[in-house]
Amino acid sequence: MKRYIAFLLAAMMLLSLAACGTKRESAESVAEKAIQAAQKLDAEQMQKYWGSSDVELDDADMSTLDAECLKAMFKNLSYEIVSSEEKENSASVNVKFTNIDIGKAFADTLATAFAKVFETAFSGETFDEETFISEELLKNLTSGNYDKVTKEAAMTFKLENDQWVLNEDCKEAVFNAMLADLDSAASTLSGEDDPNKELISEVRNWAVDDIWNDGICDMQWYYANGTSSTGETLDPEFTIKQLAKAMEKKADYDSKMAALPSEYSEISELWTKVSEQIDVLYAEIQKQGTERNGDGIDTGLYNQYFGAFDDAVNELK
Image (cartoon, rainbow, N blue to C red):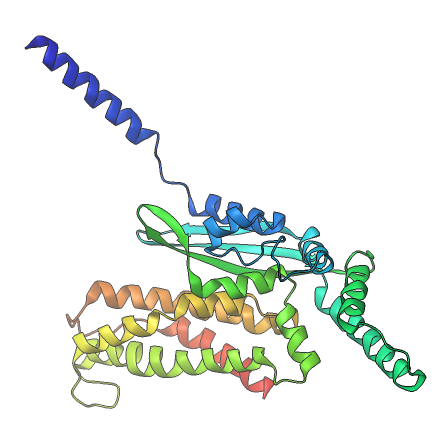
C-alpha cells in the first residue's frame, strides 16, 4: 500500500510540473512571432499565426520576379510594441510598423509604365507590360530612395483552447500598416473615393446611433429617471443586450482608426480618447446592470471628447 501511495504522490508531482511547464504564451509574444513570420514570409509560420499560407514564394502562379518584389516589400519592415493588454478572453497589442513608402514606389512605377506605353504606342515597339512593371517596381523598392513611413495598428486576439489567436477582423488593417498604408495609395491611384473618410464617417455614425443614442444615453436616463432619453418606457435588459451586440464591432473599428494615414492623426488621436470612454461607460453599465440608483452615470468626459472628435470629422466634409 505504501508503495502505491508513493507512486501516486510521484505521479501528482509530475503532473503539477507538467502544468507549470505549459504556461500560456502571452499575447505580446504571439504578436511578435506573427509579425516576424510576415517579415520572413515564412509560409509555415504564417499559417500558424495568421491562418493563411497565401504568401508562399514557391507558388506556381507567382513568378520569380514577383516573389522578389514581395520580399522587397517586407525587407525594410521594422516594428515596435507600443502597449499590450490581456483580459479574461481577449487581448490587444498595439504596434508601430515602419517601412519604406511602398505607395510612392508603386506610384513611381506606374508613372514610368504609363510613359513607356505612351512611347511604344507611336513607335510600334512591343514589350511585356507585366514584366516591365515588376522589374521597375523591384528596382524602386530596392533603390533606397524612399522615406520611411510609420503606421500604428492594433492586433486583437481571442482565447481558444487556452491560446491567443489573432482575430480575423484585424488582419487587413495590420497588414496595411505593415505595408505603409498601401491601401490609401492604391485608392488614390485608382481614383476611388477616399476609403479613410468613409471609414471615419462609418465609425462616427456607429458611435452616435448604436453606442450613444440606443445604448449609453438611454441607460443613463434610465438609471436617473426610469425612462429612455425621450421619456418613453425602456426595457433595460434588452437595451444592454443590444449595446453588447454593437460593441462587437469596436475592436475592428479601433484597429482601423489606429491605422489611418498621418494626415488623419488628429482624428485618430481623438478617437482613441472617445474609445476609452466608451469602454469605461460600457463597463459601468455592465456592472450596474438593470438596477436603478437615481443618479445616472457620468458621461462628461465622453461628451467632451466626442464633441472634439465630431468637430474634426465635420471639418473633413
